[in-house]
Amino acid sequence: MPSEILLKIFSYLDAVSLLCIGCVNKRFYHLANDNVIWFKIYSSFFPPKRTNWKTNSVERTAVLLSHATIQDRESGYWKNEYIMKQIATGKTRIFQLLKPTNPSTGLPLKTKEAIKTYSLRWVIVLKDRNGKEHVMEQVDISYNDTSITVFWYGTNWPCLDTLSTLELCGVTPLLLDQCKVPTKNGPRRRSLIAKFNLTNLTKVSTMIGSDMLVQLFRLNPGLLVGLWKKGNGIAFVMASLHHHQLIERSTLGSATTQYILPPHKPILDDVDPEYGLHGYQLHIDMHSGGHTYICGTFRNLFCRKDYIRNGYLRLTVISLKNNSQHLPLAGKVGFFWRTDVFEGNIQNCYMMDVTLLDETEKPFWCFSAPVYMKLSSKASCLYDYMGHNYDLNYMDSEGKVHVELVWIEESKEYYIVNLVLYLSTEKVNRWFGTKY
Image 1 (cartoon, rainbow, N blue to C red):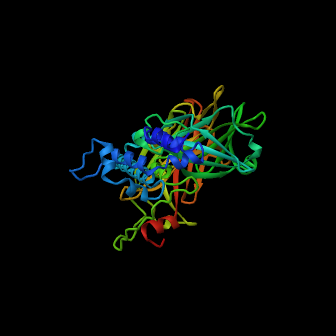
Image 2: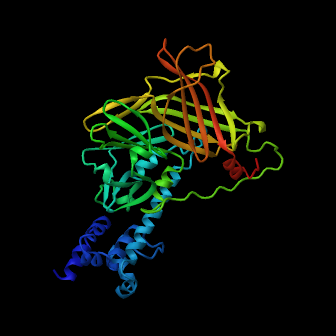
């Protein structure tokens, strides 16, 4: 078919259809980049501000710039201009939603609304040793107090032994306003969030629990891989993503590079001799499968100078010696998993979300990660509780969390009897400009 006729047909298509048809072959790609067609689309969505232009007529708008002037631009110029302006407009609207914050968590109040407005979803990209990609679409999502949990499961998993890496990416429609019901075959943008090594997964990763059907392996940060006990194949993958900078990390990166958070500029204080040691506020949420075991806020946390040891500041949240601070975990504690056919509950595993604010109520340390309780090897020094003692530990580059629990057989529940945060002095010094 002659190019002139194809261009005439293409001129009746919308922007999304043009982008899709440009993927058919090289000829269609070049024709679908036609500047005259894209200038008409651009002008219809972003009409000129001059009042003497009649914006109700796309044809008239195109006439105001001569055909030659439009075609003087390199091929695809007006397509790129339209796409970039659509992206910028969408981002402005989304980030307006994120401005109001919750005083208890210091996080945006409308993260869930922003996710739905942005049509934001998450995919995992599995790459085998030959470089072939297997893209797995998000199956389900659950919204928690300060995080989201994303699930992938199905029957079309590639063989684990052939895989080398797993990439977690946020995906959004390229043209937000025109993709009310986004599809995986429509034009989309990827933003790399994290990359994980799957080579020798069962040997180098931490197994945090199992039941009769699956074993759970933890990959930091915040990824769980469930493997079938029979055959060692992938049963499901689950990612826990903290709300802090979630929209930015899921949309502002590229398919190959992660979004880099802007550097923090410390606010110096020469008056307070214990600047950076007090005024902390912790919001903690322990949950799994829609069940919340504990969710609370602890204020006015501090560390004395003589408690700075081995490169860490110690913040005692729940004291072992203060019975009035001890708190129960509500409900049957365990990690709830499911696939197309099976579901289960792995005891003593769950997700823990930590949001620590500094004295100005800005997020200082935030994470969401799978954790597990391990039977303690040391004898209990608590005479008010008779039962088995458990430890829960988490560690990353910014700090550590240590939790001690006691199982009360009479009431069939766990009690948190000790909760301590250890903050890296290196992180504190960078944040506050101090020299502890």
